[in-house]
Image (cartoon, rainbow, N blue to C red; front, side):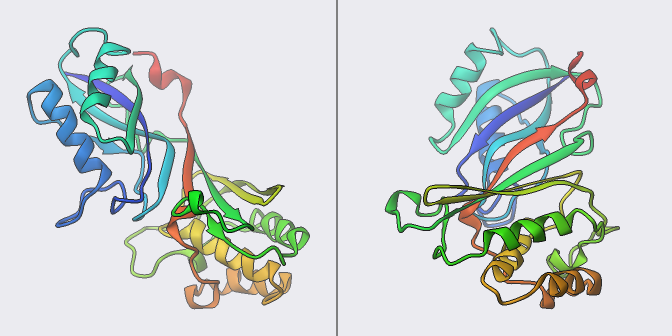
Length: 251
């Protein structure tokens, strides 16, 4: 059996996240079914993480095991697989990797982006969050820099999650403005459930003058989810990059 990494993207609007769930449509279930149909045997994938209902992925990795793939797996197989998959899921490439390579545990970092628009736009429905332009972007940028001085982000984690630690190392947190659009980019070695959406909601509170930088420090240090801002809507969130050690792909 060989191990392969599947690199794909998906629009998450119609799915209850990546991970298979009982009585709910998921990206993973659709990908597993499509791979199994093409290869004529049951295939199970394991993703680089889980995304919440309605969250999108511009770059997502999953691994699976199989005998040698038919034809030219880097072109013909990808083409045929995309023909079977629905229009909101697209495979970019299939990469042979070393035995034991793990899409989740071998990831070095993950990068998310959250998209906000200041102008009502019907073409951005479920793809960006509408927020009026009365935000103090300078203060929000200071808040983003403040995030990187901390490591325990329990205040931004969904309650009752089974994790051993709330420690994350954030290496990038920036806001960029372009016309009517505002883009938040955050990169870390790992993320807690709902963490990015809670961070964005809290930074928006900062930009609206509802809290101060001192309040943001207190919220993080108190580690209480109820003190942080509300989670922003899922449709504006995108997983955009996963980094792996280069040697992983020397199969």
